[in-house]
Length: 223
Image (cartoon, rainbow, N blue to C red; front, side):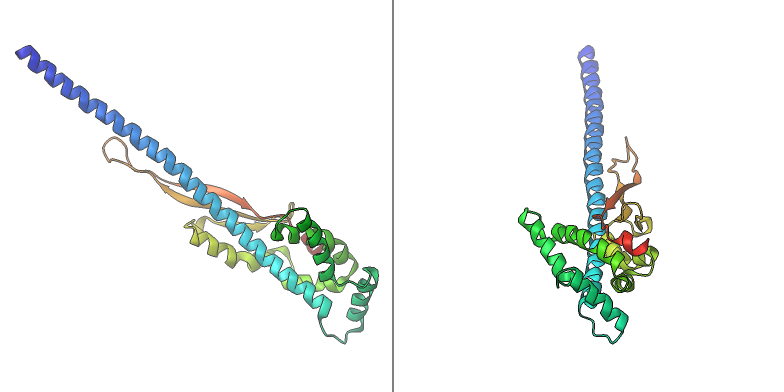
């Protein structure tokens, strides 16, 4: 009987040990899954933030093009620049040229946003180089320098960052002068799950970088 009691005690200890191992494995698995989820959250935040910033630049670009096409002015140099553009482009305004190219990309199955970006990248660089008043309008809308442009899209970027619970204090944003796109770096705080017995709690930032689409025409504005 004494021998049986010892075996029962050993079995109980073994079961407790086994349950502890299972608990540790379970916690590790949950934390691995949570790391993946937090990483995806951080990636979504920076990607959406970069797109939001890009949308601001595209809206400002549309405004500048519209002003060049339609702005009432008595400046003879401005009028001459606009007239030369119309004559050179067979009577079409800049916006009409963009819409024409956009239609071609839409016909290929691209969505509206990508089609517009590809259209402005095709139409604007040559016109910016050839028409100083178009360049002037774009600079006034987008900022006189690329650093000014960062301040322009910063509020939209930071709004998305905070909405997605990324860390504003760990966020860096820039306009790449190599790729001419918005780049956003940020992080989401990861807090591990712990049983406070086998494993202690861990706090760590999970950083990610998001990139907006390339806006090639910006190079002609700032270089």
